[in-house]
Length: 326
Picture 1 (cartoon, rainbow, N blue to C red):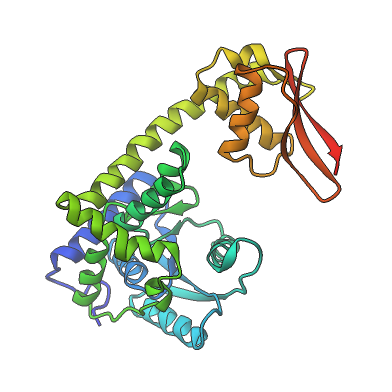
Picture 2 (picture 1 turned 60 degrees about the vertical axis):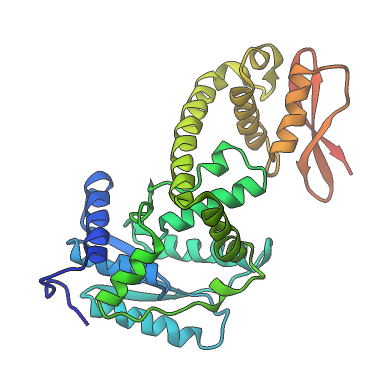
């Protein structure tokens, strides 16, 4: 296996990865010390190898989800592989649990473990342009808004994604050039998972039907929507103090003067701060109707618990959140 500094002639794939990490580091990092989340797959192994060769001081954080037989051995192998690059490595053992199915539980457990282990260092993640395109397609299929369709950002401290403009195939070619044999997670080919079906069925069909370039176009769409969402969210933040009073009621007159895209962002923030549980788009729109389509309609349920529910009512040109017994 190639060691850090031993490579004299690099493949194009290796050069692209190292260049991507160096560019990311120049733009976003203040220190050379980073963590890299490592699964043992091609994307994360290639990222860890490239980060070392880009001059960063790397600690690989390998999360063992304990979801498959032999997962401990796979995690130990991944950690040894990262050490072989000239980095440090740690194995983090988690037990996913909670609502939302195994994918959501595993994701929560993984990010919690990385947060606890990173020791105030940034964590680099191996998401590629293909992951970005899949995320946008999933959002489109679910009718998501701009915030969701803007998908993943390259830097949202402490999480960094240096490879968002790199294709998945490039990480595989780089691993081959470095003599690495990545672990193939069987979950990545299991059609029970929605993302797997998007990856292996839907996206290739789009590419074929439209003559290629779809993944790059979807990633560009995410970039554009992220810019739009940032501008609208900043506008909503500016007007929020005028719309929401100290008693936590919201002024209908102020909200009604706002464009829908801004007003609903103000409402979503307000609902979250007054205790609504996950104010989805449909709920936010119902509350917005209390502002712009008022005809004396009753309260809108926005969450609560087993003992009471929270509702939004309109009285005296103000919106208020009130508890009601179940």
